[in-house]
Length: 306
Image (cartoon, rainbow, N blue to C red):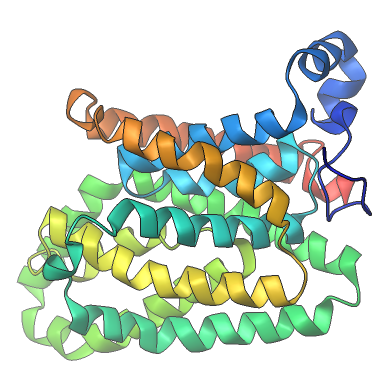
């Protein structure tokens, strides 16, 4: 069904679907997976899993797609990031298009974030265009940055309640000073998020919410917080995704399979949100992100496969 293409740009052969360590130490498991599940169906199931996490959490769950593509399916870091960016932009649009979230968005805050994130994301895309002639170096840089940002995102998800309290305390203690410098801090936070998204596809959700929690604990209620973060994340992921697509870092066939699973996953998860405690979901996702970050940094992950 899918033609064979150069490594890193197409769906990998079935025997490469498992991570290197598992392929060498437990070949029977890899053989069972390869024989029982067609490869395109594995991508559909992966998209459904991440789509359910996105639907359950709103933020954070989408951070798992890039490491899943790299560690689980053997895609190169650059292709995984580019494909995930287009996937993320599409799923965010599908999840929010019919919700009327624009009425809850604080557009002034979105503008401040974009003032930093758009130039930072554009600068990262320029660097990627320069570095794409040396794919080994590009994959090494992307892999290490991805591991670090995943670890930070895991901590951010765990510390969300405490960060809101810290933001409230600082706002009460230094109200005048905080108000004077809040615009500068918001632009700087946007720049960090934009650079992270452009380089690794991770950060628009989990890290963006953390920044807003710390900077605007009184101004943004929970629903306005998520809506404002999504309003900022959508154009940034779309810009970064378009840049990676122009560089040839997007596999459209894999993307189609992921979207085929993610849209039903999001719709299904929306019915389960009330039954699952948000704190429990955040903790589980944080643990998964932490494990993936450790695997990327110290295991047989990106660094060695590149």
